Length: 286
Image 1: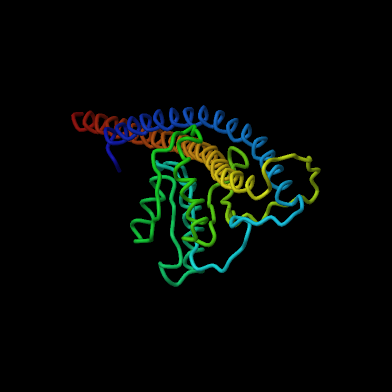
Image 2 (image 1 turned 120 degrees about the vertical axis):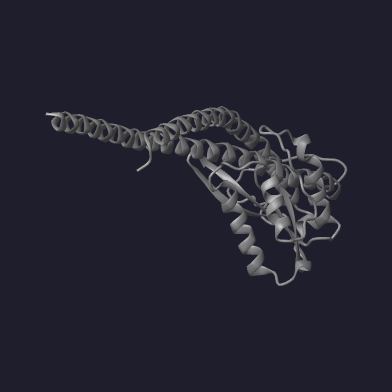
């Protein structure tokens, strides 16, 4: 059995760990509130720009744009959103496991795909496995602005426009609630899901023509989809970290309780042994 000093030291160190995890839980909860608001406030913009794009693309006439057309797939791009830090439960591992399995099941050669990781954890994951990385971005703020990721978003869209890749998927954790995040796979390019079904579209007057408008608007729309996924992923990250730190704090409480019980039992056994020795010594002197 461990000595009283050893048990007491473990209780002390566990209490210190609990203070850290509790502080991290509170910080993540604070960040989550803002990240959730950022994600929600971006939705009206996304709904409107999708409506405008759908209205123009389906407004009649012979509309043609590379981002709207499906072509034979020779190379696929995967944009994967992870975090820069760990201690977030299964936030990173779940999305990385899904995209890695997708690549293994779909491709037989490294020439058939490329990866664009957002986040240090994803970058390290693909680097260690010697998987082709086209572009990477790390150090994204906890409350990102579009300017933070505009370059990588524009480059990802440009890779498709230039024919370097023939389709682009994005993987991220969709925020459902503070305790639930779902790994989401979305086919970003080509833009084949711009549907007008069930929607009342406004009528727009534009100049000069549909092709010119779409040439400017579609890349912006695709970049906005990436930014929206990032905001969603950030909210999921903070929620996952808050949940993980709460679980760690609860586990620390349980461990402190068990150690305290062990300490009291060991102390009681020590006192009982001392009493027994004293009584035995007194009896020997009689």
